[in-house]
Length: 114
Length: 111
Image 1 (cartoon, rainbow over the protein chains, first blue to last red):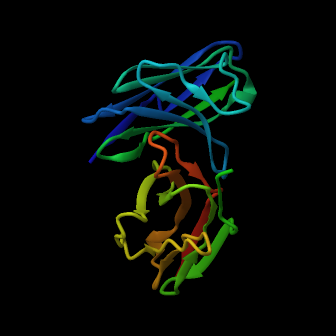
Image 2: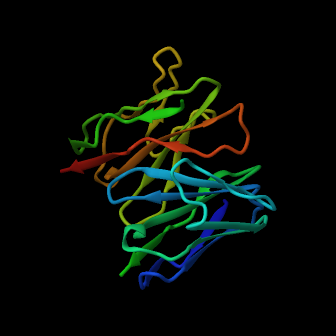
């Protein structure tokens, strides 16, 4: 089956620094990738949708300048949290959608901003 | 607007008891419904999709368009079923759209 690899699984950074999270689709091409944010014991909130080679579409209330998304190839999307602050601490999950495999999720990244 | 509602935050049952996790949705087009499961410290895994009409790990779900529901059922719960369950929706008529999730229901099965 399809596998999505997400790295890092955990990251701790200082307030004001930037953090990059990678999401790779293994063994399949992801025409579309999605980024979600999950608060403790809460649902997954869609942050943005990205299609390879085009700009990401952000959900209402998500700051595009803070959460930079790059989808440079059919197997890689990155989310960069710029100038991170403690309120950005959360669990970030990517999902990739391929033609054959439907939606596949990464294992998530626990971001802690101190 | 598209929305997925899971009214129960927590469902506690005893081993061997029947389980029904409720899910209602709101969508103006043709929806595709899914159930995902998240075991402790693991990634989200697809459990069911209404299109495939499969039964996975003894779970079934039927799409009821009249009631706009997609409840997840299992006749006899097992302890290993304890997990977080998310109902999700996407548009069959909109390729490339994201999954919209409900808030999730924690299923706790005890012996």
